[in-house]
Amino acid sequence: MTKRSIAIAALAFTALALAACSKTDSKTGSADANAHAESGFKHIGADDGDAARGKLLAAKKLAGGQACADCHGADGAKPLDATYPILAGQYQDYLFHAIQQYRDGGREHALMGAQIKAAADAGQMDDQAIADLAAYFATETGPLGDLHGK
Image 1: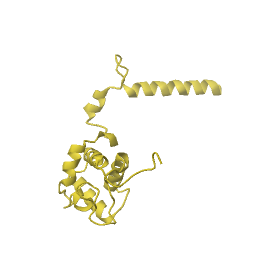
Image 2: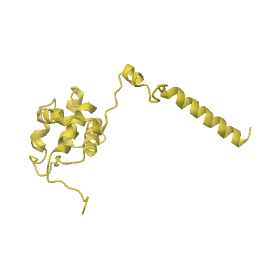
Image 3: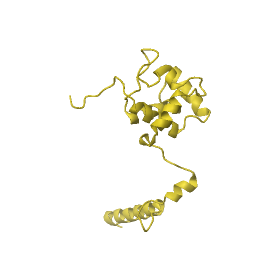
Image 4: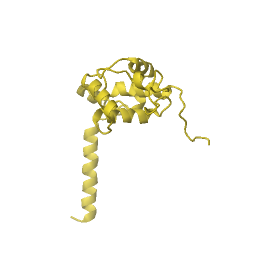
């Protein structure tokens, strides 16, 4: 076999493997949503949050003993301590990933890590809850700004 025929065979194999894995719907050409539904998997991303649910969650005492509002302020704009971050107006995807990292151990802080991990262990801090919190704090008005238009 020549290098070219090996490359063509590899491409054909890859195309077949991808086609077999994607399970596309012949009518719409979209991936089969039932495959995910049947497995119980639902992807939650940073933009999948509900700010109204996030507001309720931010005020609720979680398994760690505190509510987000206890330290960061009711709207995330007036933290209890000047060393605590302002969450109001922060980018939604940043908040989503930061909270995930506290939960998963990729980001460490003695208080936040313990709070988030306790809530996660109690089933209160899944990706949907995190997305909801991120949506809420991102929609709140606070003193944060960026350099757009400057």
